[in-house]
Image 1 (cartoon, helix red, strand yellow):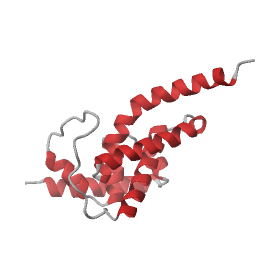
Image 2 (spheres, rainbow, N blue to C red):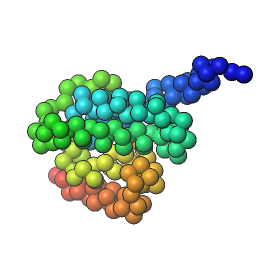
Image 3 (cartoon, rainbow, N blue to C red):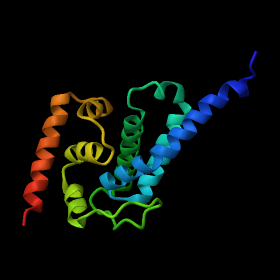
Length: 163
C-alpha cells in the first residue's frame, strides 16, 4: 500500500506543471482587467492557493485556467472595493513577469476603459484565448450573453480607436 506522501506526489506534480504555465497568463489578464499589477499578483497567488487546496476538483474541470482567472478577478475586485481604489488607481509598476509590449498602448488603455463586464470577456477571449463557451462557463453566463458582451466591447473599441 502506498504511503500518503507517495499518493500526493502525482497531484503536486500536476499542479506544479499547471502553475508554471498558467500563472503568467492569468497574471497578465488580471493586471489588464484591474489595472493594478501588485494587486493582480496577489490575486493570482491567492487564486493559486485556492486552486491547490481544491486541485482534485479543479483539475477535473473543463477549463481550470478560467476558474483561476475568475477567482483572481473576484478576489482583486473585493480588495479594490475594500481599499476604495476603484476610481483612483495609480499607474501600475513594472510587471513581475515579462509581458510583450502591445502594438499600440492606446489599445490597452481603451480596453481598460471598457465597462467591467465587457472588459472581462474581451480579456478572457483575446489574452487567455478562451472560447465563448469557456468564458460562459468561467463566469456562469449564457453563451449569448458572452457573445453580446464581446460584440459590444469590440464595437466600442473600434469606435474609440478609429482616427
